[in-house]
Image (cartoon, rainbow, N blue to C red; front, side, top):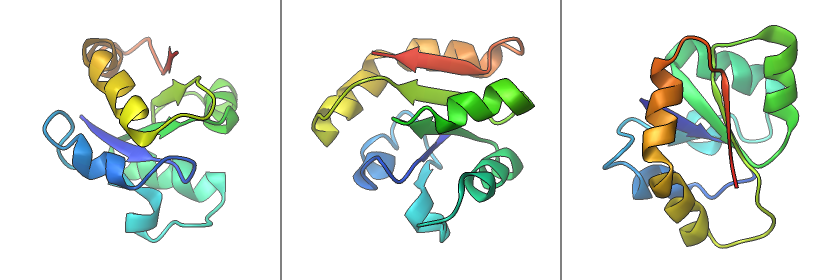
Length: 110
């Protein structure tokens, strides 16, 4: 289970969470900085990532096109990178359950 962090999240999250999500990356690390949502979506789908974003774009895309990729939508306003990391750590079991369940494509965390 690996995560792909959208541009609206810190690139540091991929390395900070490597103990729980080995192989995770950030769009910038994959050469997708500034890329459109379609390119990010397709890369996540191709490489088996769960997309992580604070924007509704990928959630809306999943409603239109289904999944994979699955989407972790962080519904929280401005906050620190450490707060985002803590949220993801706190919801590890929920993320793992989403990853395993073929019926769940989106997980919202608050």
